Length: 136
Length: 205
Length: 291
Image (cartoon, rainbow over all chains, first blue to last red; front, top):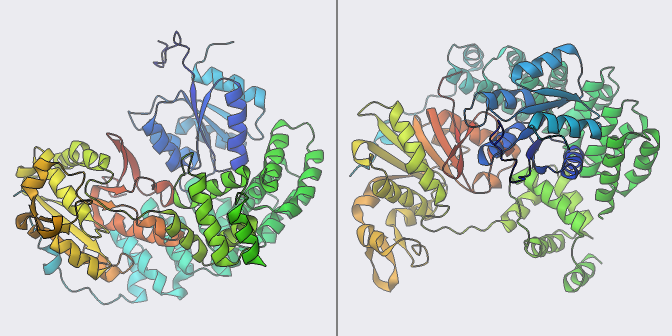
């Protein structure tokens, strides 16, 4: 059992929740991350993302900042305040790139920050790193 | 039994007459969020109060009051309201910004009046938000405007947002523009994927 | 001619390609929160074929454009109505009653003082299966039920159906999931194989005529602890959903809960509620502190 409580001996597939209101973005995440051995669930906004986190265990969430109903900062902040789900690590993703936005992301509780357009190789490396998947 | 018939419905006082505009505007600044919410909701009966509702938006800290203010502004939609909401696209307050995007999606004609201005904004993020609104807009011209962005916007993320919109609402006439876009961003793995996905969707494959 | 085209479609070819079906499902899910399981394609296609014909559309693509861009959203409403099944029976979606007695009510009780009422609102109550199911679940399965004054309000916009609900007379089909033991405890068998809720239970539910979009009706509901609003909001447009959810926010006391239908989610409606999980249900809570 690793520090996140996920068994490595059983070869259980790491699970990632991708939260983005853009359909092509979600398809891209699914394509790249499934190819890297992740099980992928999708949500289209922060409320739906939070609901899915409550419903099933995840090893990682990838969260867009700008979304309807609930933005990424608010979602991650809410997750960090909920003992049931606060341990799920978060990669926040945005088109914005100034220092202030990055600081806001980490203050909300992100573990990492990526900028769009996302580079597939970087996405895989960072996802494995943050989710605690052993290097292959 | 543990179940009792509540008597509160029968004994509640008769509803008060609708408050006048001056009272509502004063209540907008009340200490209690429930009072502010009630005022924000009843302002929907007063089109002349639209600007006051917009003014209150930027000052309002309570998410539930803000939500009701936006609902009222959707009812009171007009090009003037759309201008004020579009200004919020520049806000650093992410919840406020995204709520403004959602509200603008509910006012297709009012938003359309300002669209070109927003699509020409210097700030690529403002252009992205305008494109996001387009992707969900109930307006028959939305696919045409999205194709326009694909043809002319220089910024990769703005174009990516437009590709996403076309994946949802684009027609066959967008395929040529998407093909051109793929050539323009040749070498960008995400763009290639997104454009392929959008084109498959449009073709109904 | 459109009719001939659609007749041909109905007879032989599928109404839409797999990709079109996927696109439609995503759109429908985004609008209503309703997700179609695998194997539902035929079900969905038949209904869309029907709507294509009724709207005089030439093809699925043509019809889909209508649904997406029609300003008043009327066709979308027809489509939602045709896709959803309006069956009601006792203990429908019973995992929510599990959440009520196993999680929600105990938590609410912890925030209350002795003597405070606990208020539950079932809206729309339709012919009464839902409020009576709530009542029976509480009486049978909440060990604290006798320590509290529990007020169950049940409302509907349709006066005829409210009359049915007050009468409390149900068919065998409606009570099929009610055990023999519970039937003998809470129902009286009537002529024709029907079952009537016992008088004591019928008289303890407060039925009222309410149109959720009319503030004159709804402002009477205050300090509610739990709202059951299942399978109503999917029929509203986006603005109607926002308004109704905001009204429920005002109706609830601080920390109050709202339960939506099985396929519904606040993620399509509003962010002012906090998602909470009890047992296998996602329910939504009004924040405890006034913001």
